[in-house]
Amino acid sequence: MSTFTLPGLGFPLIQAPMAGVQGSALAIAVCRAGGLGSLPAAMLSPEALRVELHRLGAGTSGPYNVNFFCHVPPVADAQREAAWRRLLGPYYRELGIDPAGIPAGAGRAPFSEAYADVLEAFRPAVVSFHFGLPAAPLVARVKAWGGRVLASATTVAEALWLEAHGADAIIAQGLEAGGHRGMFLSDALSTQMGLFALLPQIVARVRVPVIAAGGIADAAGVRAAMALGAAGVQVGTAYLLADEATTSAVHRRALQHEEAGHTALTTLFTGRPARGIVNRLIRELGPLPAEAPAFPLATAAIAPLRARAEADGSGDFSPLWAGQNASGCRAAAAGITAGLAEGFPTI
Ligand SMILES: Cc1cc2nc3c(=O)[nH]c(=O)nc-3n(C[C@H](O)[C@H](O)[C@H](O)COP(=O)(O)O)c2cc1C
Image 1 (cartoon, protein in one colour):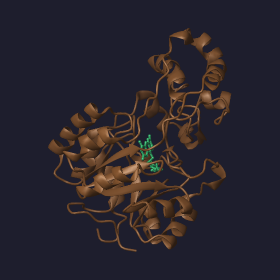
Image 2: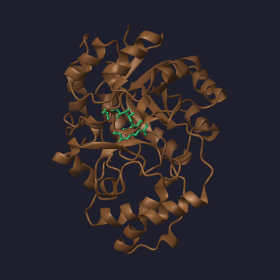
Image 3: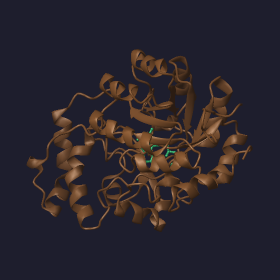
Image 4: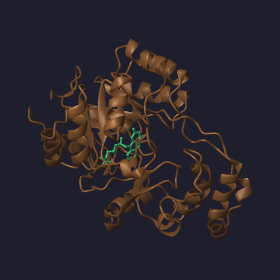
């Protein structure tokens, strides 16, 4: 298997896009260190995306990746929303929050023509997607400016689907990975595999390059992934404590504590399964409550609890996204990138 290459890229290391904990500053630092920095756009308006892309372009002349979600926005279900707020009722009372004043809201927008309009002016070398791919005309727009289309697969079936629908490379997202599962063909968690099981099976079945993601924290992890046929790696959790990330104080504290060793897949914070450090809300309600509204609608009802608790320095109601291996976390993005790069054979 050949490595994943792009003009101007030092080595096939992608800094995982991480919505909510980083912007252009982290991406720029990684690009300057020779990796592929990523800008997560799932929580940015088109206007905010344009501002961040200007910063990226000013900060690096190297290639970069812009990442989007491509979920189908759900139809709101009033009954489920009411059940959800009932479940959270005791916490509203405890923290003195009036649930009637909480607006319903989406929180995360899928890729669309409006985002493509903004992107087109910047022509990013790579555009990556989570939760499948957008409609064919949108994929075609990215390819029209020469952009490479990447997308996450969590099963062999998803990898085959992505290849058939135009992905230029596939990110094999092992079960160890922090943040949202990119799963999109099935919502059965029993389909999800650890990276050592998933990666070689995908490599054996697709022709496009496969990028390994999930639990990679150091050069030895990079070497292991490359030995299993990866064309490159995508690393997220190791960058969460980087000075250039915007990770909150409560999140940073949890990552440096022993509790970081205990993560779970939970639908509590957004409605889709995502891996985060087990905190009070997960412990008390269980990680996968039936009442959680469809992605991304669960977010709105949690937001005021999170804000109130965080103001008091507590992460009890925060999504503390992290993968199963936080041992690679360091302070400076350049150092993290250089350390990981030592695992590539040509360096
Ligand atoms: C805090 C956090 C936020 C994430 N947000 C995104 C995102 O916005 N888009 C995306 O494609 N993947 C996202 N991911 C998943 C990463 O792309 C990747 O699969 C994962 O970080 C790899 O595993 P690792 O965290 O063990 O390195 C996120 C991961 C984390 C830890």
